[in-house]
Length: 87
Image (cartoon, rainbow, N blue to C red; front, side, top):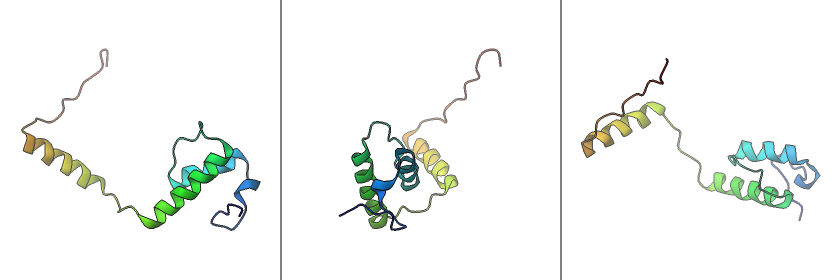
């Protein structure tokens, strides 16, 4: 059975560049080490995973607040900013 993408076209008819772009779109950042077939399989698996486990929306302000409160609970101070020499 040929691997079809969301538009119904055959992935085996695509170039590596097109597959790389599709991989990046579904959340696979590093594909240089993958063969053509591995890339198609990874895209299919990632699409299935994305469908089953839709990520929760991220709110950056909550991430910062969570990191601050976690450091506070551990009794750590905020990280110091380092200024490069000559700046």
